[in-house]
Length: 450
Image 1 (tube, rainbow, N blue to C red):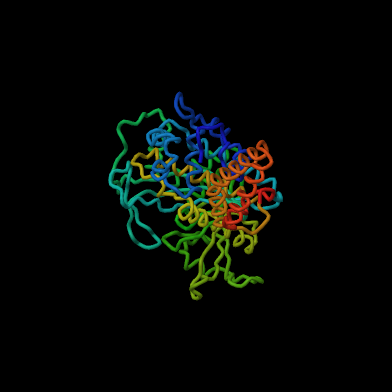
Image 2 (cartoon, helix red, strand yellow; image 1 turned 45 degrees about the vertical axis):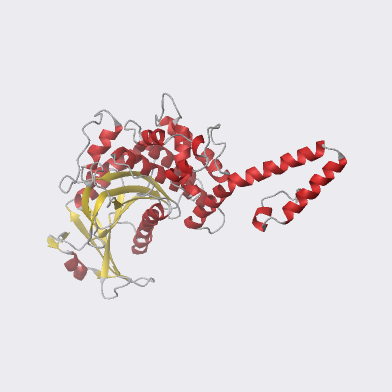
């Protein structure tokens, strides 16, 4: 674990190299995360960051035999609850810098996209969490307590990197309100205000921040919950095209002066001749005045008698390219699954303040960025899950393997300084002790000692 030692000295080898390659501490300093006294923000950040890979929570760590060597619980929670830290600036800076590194590993002809989606951030057992609200899960129809985690990421079809997020509350279904003690000049207050805005407004702000930071993409991919004319107009105004699923609701499409529903649009569309099965029809239309679009109808994968509609504002794309690019949107679903199942999103810290939710989510996203970079650099077909558990294994064996090596070095040093008879006795005893060790421990010992 991270002891009170020079920076990065006790990080596992793979984490240490990734920290140095991505300049994580540099981005942390540039975001203005500093403390006047006590443990530095860099040490506390590394401690919380690597805690997951030990597969321990903060309570178990302080209860362990090494608990006295770590900062107290109050120091860590003050760090996570600080309303003045610019966590968004840190995450955007780290993500955009990683995007530039990833971009050098692929062809310039590869399609790059921004992906926008939301996911449940559940706090069902909580009662006093700041800005807690009640939402409906549209997948199951059940209600939950928590937030909507609106996320925007970047992907080239191989690597997904989260750029920005917002934990949205609700003024209509709110359970708790905003804390009255928050400094209105702080970053925490701005994020609280953002949580009460509508999703299209937040998405437009996310796009502005990403573009201002230097992230580039050709398309914005979104699900049917966001594919509406006002938001599409905001995206087009920023020089980007939209590819998204179309929901069969009360939208109307303009075709030769007539307003058609999606079902009527399907009837008016022309059949498509394609080598790929499942592509049914295509039509050029207008979602609203001055927003020309092309709608592609494909067969539903599980319900063969139904179809799905995909919309694009790039009229130069072929039907096959529209479907191929939209398939990249699945990367953000993998991201949500990985952060919740492996990286302890929602579960690692159970604080009540909104600032802790923001800081913890940023830390989880940072872990994912590190895993994504390691995955992109690897030459084998390891999955994110395999890579995560490999890092956990390395961290778990770090302490005792180093201690065992140091013990053997000490015994060998004593043996070389002793007399011939005593040295021979020490070597025999050492060989007998090594011979009865389990094979997985012998694998960590140097061959010369064995």
